Amino acid sequence: MAENGLSVDEDDLDLPARSRSHDGASPVALVELENKLAERTRLHENTERELSKAVLRTRELEDQVDQLSKQLERARSTKPSSEEPSGDSEARAEEAERKLEDTERVYKARMQTMEEDYQLAVHYVK
Image 1: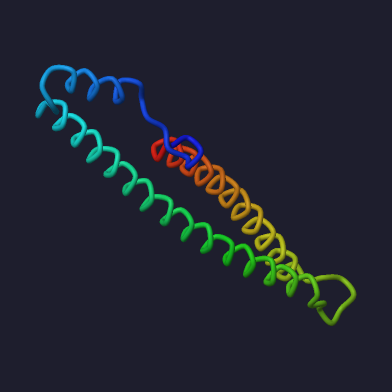
Image 2: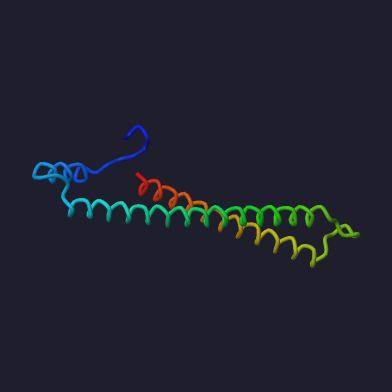
């Protein structure tokens, strides 16, 4: 089972063995195992939903970073007619740079959160 990515607690293995040694499968042990399975299934489903949301949010943030990068490149490549950049263009370029930096920072933080959520999901699935 371990080679397929599944792990079983020793308590889970001992519980049915102990109940079989008396007179067949114990209803209490069966209920306990069913409850554990239901709880783990619920946790797995919740984690999968959270992971899907995080992946979607990551894609949205990647799109936003791309848009801001393009906007910044356009702002940098557009030169005013005079030799010196106008104060308004410069302010817009600086604002775009700040937005890009903020978005990248948020994106990296969300990526870290998504990675942690993924690791947690893997832990619960095992």
